[in-house]
Length: 434
Image 1 (spheres, rainbow, N blue to C red):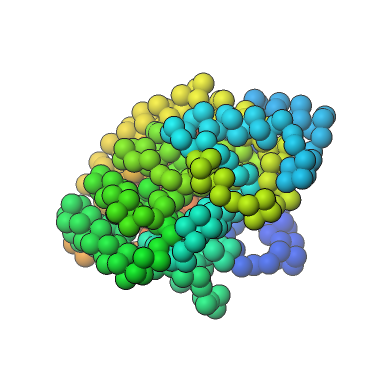
Image 2: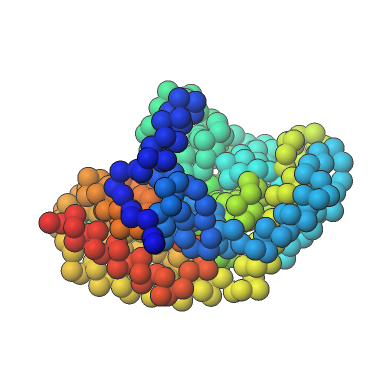
């Protein structure tokens, strides 16, 4: 018999949460009193045995599904050979094979890989590479961007004030508007033009001392914001005109989540540097910064390194994950299931006053909750209530931005599973609106 879902955690979950509060630094934001016990495919179970449909995928990490058998087998096989080799000091085939596999899936010319352990590290490496190659200090990033929490990445992050509070002074970064046209109350093309003009002003303002522009092709933590189609090509053009490297943060949007392996490919643009993580390890911490050999060849020996980059278990899991994504055509599934979900969500948007906007590419979908369609004022209270009403009914969701419901399930999800989740979500919306 299935265990009942609870708005409040069950006894085993409560016990774990109490222990957590005693020994874990409470600087993180836990949206739910949910205690993970195990997972399989698109489902997770809590410590009290209740089953949930997963619309968060470990924050867009478990794209190949939880406990993917091929990933588990690859990691198990590597476990029998060794866990760690010190890849910054010796050679090993497994990290090389992972890099070869990754490069084979990227646009031509992105052929040199630096391996790390997380999205933040992959961005930090890109930031250092850009400054090193250009020998210039300024970077341009975007309002509402999230690039990570180490000091270089955090200098570019602009998602929420609490993420930056009391950490300054920051490295030299100028923030310019990202075309969040729904929130800025402009037409898409008008918003794109405005943001590109503001970006060009900032570029001129640094007087030739610009190293790079960092961008998320679809903003993640900022609210799952999809830019107008002409905006990313416009950014590429300005980078070329001002001799700046275009650094593409694909940490959340990459690995077929939007249909293409890189989200920026949806806009017909090739970046100079790519940062990628989350889904590439199949659940094991793994990050990669990719550029041309011409760029990475400018780094002198010893100018950048780490201890755990190229970890054998992570790279073994990563190889299996990338092969699975490609063979199973998860990008095509993301497009197919994403279109199915967007159609249903658009119908919900018409029916429910609190749903102000539905946007997305593939299985990277945002549902913005507002006080009213006319004001477009964010309503975090209702968004929070919807998330918890969904959890109570067996659907695991997390937020993004000011009041956006983030939908980023495993890319293995079927239309039937997606429909079940959307049924729960709509029921939660109705419950919240009463």
